[in-house]
View (cartoon, helix red, strand yellow):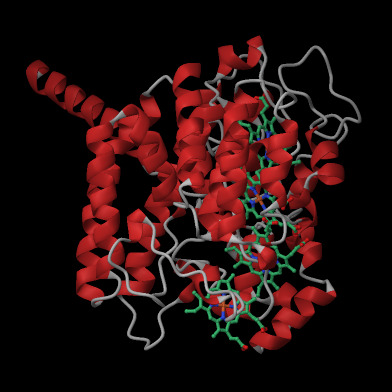
Length: 436
Ligand code: HEC
Ligand code: HEC
Ligand code: HEC
Ligand code: HEC
């Protein structure tokens, strides 16, 4: 009997550990968690996160609501759906209105299922606290208690925004899309702005409502700078491959979903004859519509410096993807599966690594070298290369010293309708010495 009990106990322990492992790996995004979302009003009182100034004696600032509501564009995300721009988009799509359409609400507010909306939940709150931190039903009471650890909050379904991969998945779900919600070419054709995203830059651009000080670091890990850039590129590549598989490969439509392609492959003046394949698109004939491969191109610039063998493998798989995209859907699927396997292999490795300043500089030199060789001719890739160069420069605390050069390069991307691949290439060539 005693023996049996011990075994049963051990089995429960194993089950608990397994469950814990599974829950870390597959945390549901806040929009799809199973808890009640109680609404901003439940977070914003003046004794909670609604103070006018940051407090000194608590481990969090407690003025998060004020920062969010006055400085953070997420607070305006629902109001955007009432604008004349949104009205035009809705009209073009044949929707009764933008602020009642699920497809718009899914990214412009915390659009959880009706049964999960608590008494103070307001659909017009926009992308508010629980859209990122998860439904607070289980932790709203306990998370303020003395001695409660971050892990205890996570166990009650607080979303792990401090974790780089989890954060990337969260931001990408709205800033790129998922199988449940996408700003498709149809939506863009109706007038929606093109979505562009880079995790490190967007994390820095969202007005911070937290401080990463010594106290913070005792409570939870924090990832920032170059590593966040790496995580963002890996997750973006994974997301885009998964979505491509679902929406391109499994579609019967004659014209494929154009969301996945380089927008400027089609959208530029016919008199601007710029065809010239880059090495990743070797063998593509003139006039080919090419897939947006910006995140793979960015990872290549990193691997070239830190892992030449893996660079070779990823490059070969990318060339194969572009070729297959001109053959048929089964060929495309096979090429996607190959890339997915490679990325999975790289994933843990790249994210766990510590990067030295020397390596950062080498990656930046490589980005500028590739740019000046004309390898970043697609607007999206040029844009990502610029964001990477800027992000590394800021990480190395050279932002002020190299401001002129960064501004020059940015100038060539500021208006995408006027983007010239040749100008970008020449500019990169001209400024690259200053970055050495
Ligand atoms: C629920 C969807 C959603 C999530 C999750 C989300 N965002 Fe956003 N984000 C938006 C929308 C919608 C806007 C545009 C708001 C507007 O102006 O109407 C936006 C705007 C922004 C902006 C301003 C962009 C600009 O051009 O100035 C930044 C920066 C940003 N988000 C960063 C992030 C980061 C970082 C994350 C992840 C921690 C994130 N977002 C998660 C939907 C979301
Ligand atoms: C996949 C998520 C997603 C979907 C679906 C989506 N949006 Fe957006 N939308 C965004 C994000 C993210 C931004 C901010 C882009 C940026 O600045 O980087 C944005 C920006 C906008 C803007 C420009 C806001 C500004 O201040 O410049 C308008 C207008 C807009 N969306 C309307 C709509 C409408 C109307 C719908 C429904 C037809 C819709 N959106 C569907 C994510 C989405
Ligand atoms: C677009 C996503 C997003 C929204 C919206 C958002 N947060 Fe955050 N929040 C983050 C990220 C990212 C962090 C930093 C990583 C972390 O510590 O989890 C953070 C951190 C925090 C922290 C932790 C500070 C610390 O020192 O541990 C608090 C508290 C917080 N947010 C409260 C709020 C409140 C209250 C709101 C609504 C008024 C809000 N957040 C809205 C993304 C968001
Ligand atoms: C395969 C070619 C192709 C690709 C790739 C492509 N588009 Fe389009 N796009 C078109 C066509 C065709 C139209 C319809 C043009 C018209 O009505 O005059 C269009 C229309 C549009 C419009 C509306 C323009 C108007 O005149 O009203 C926008 C905005 C747009 N696309 C954005 C994008 C974005 C953003 C991307 C990248 C994610 C993209 N397109 C990728 C072919 C393409």
